[in-house]
Amino acid sequence: MSIISSSTKIKVSSTLDKSTPRKSLVDRDPGTCWTSTQGLPQWIQLSFATSVIPTRLYITFQGGFVGTRVSIQIAKNAASLSGTARSDPAWRLL
Image: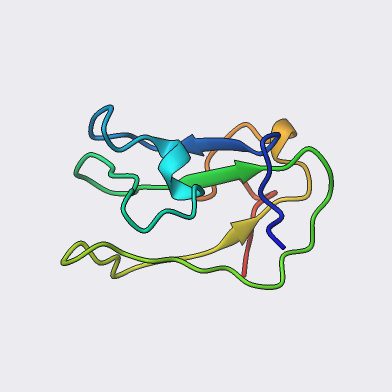
């Protein structure tokens, strides 16, 4: 069972164009994908309406576009965070 629902808010660092939207991250369709613009860092933020305890996370990179540095960071209350994961001490690296 997925913890991602219609109430899950998705934010991304950038989107290349309208054909690769952020909603493609969670649509479970292997024929779609989210594509960011070039540059670092790129990020994805999922905000849930209620507290969640994920047990698994699957990340699939498309073709030759493979992330060489990936980190997973969590925050108890992302709505109250003002910075990005790199600049805000409320984020915790897993």
